Length: 482
Image 1 (cartoon, rainbow, N blue to C red):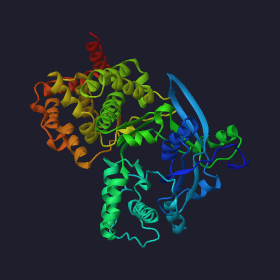
Image 2: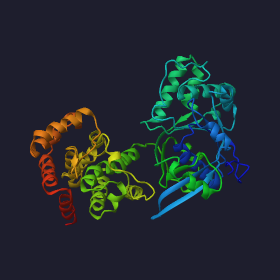
Image 3: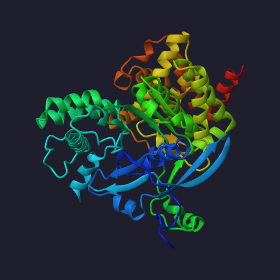
Image 4: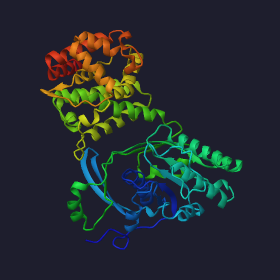
């Protein structure tokens, strides 16, 4: 069967306006798909030149297919399960700086270049003191980018209109700020001119971003059927969910240069991304973390099954809409839409997400994802969020390490596991609750000092242990319905 390339299918070519560091599954299913949509719908005319950021990568495979690949998007769309696919054609070529560094630097000479996109993993935006401007190439991504920007600065004499809009997608907080800080450090180390530093500071835009799309990646187990369906061989098939969100923090000019709204893309341009980060952590991640001990002790193994269960599903929806959303500051309509999207993602029939797979380090996750909602709810409502406290009681029960007559494969910090092992081996329910809630190593606050907190968690834990999760949760849901 023929390999996918531009001689086999009708595609478009575009002006190279984007240099992208990273050729992995996520960027191809996320950023490149959005560029493709803007090209197709809004005449964005943005071709992508890929830079392989590490020595081992996919650039040769990508070039063998002329930059083409097939993207499958699977999930809930407009309330219905949808699986659809298309060939993405925005990538024009790939460059491997480890094989041809001169070819890499030549990218900087392109007058049409405007954007930098990257995803080099969480460890990608790092400072390596050993990197030098004379290296071919420098090892770190920020050093490579510094060398490219310096070459561009030299080529165009520091022209202000030849600065770049830099949009990193690495999963670290304030990724754009961190990348800029690292580049400026290299400029200092390499004794680059003050004029270059000024050009970086005033003529290049570093955006902070939040990215969100589940990308399972290459469908290895289904590839034979997919190949038969497509009628061509594609070594770079990638799968992603239907949902997507790209929050880009930057000046209004960035929005003016990216025609996302015309295409209906879920790209949010803002001057403050923190409310969106908080929304994601509290609703999406917080719902996951709240669900894990409740659903698993109820006898359910998968996220989708939890949502479809009438009792567990009712519980989780009440927690999201009535206890988490009221603690957030975005408009109610915006919060409710995001929450409904989260539920659609949880019930995606094309993804099977095991509860145990997201139970890793549940104590620290509860602290960062759920506890802030509890504390904010208490502050705003002057009462306790019953569903979230029930989840905390379930978490304590979960860390007993037993369910359904079998041991639970707990995965957490060793000190946390040792703490719960000691508590459950010798303590009463009331003493376990008191010790857990007052453990400032877990929470950084003593939760027993909040009025009614200890009694409520203790009552729920007593119900879970003595009545079983099904009856305990059933009783809670009945009380909520009253």
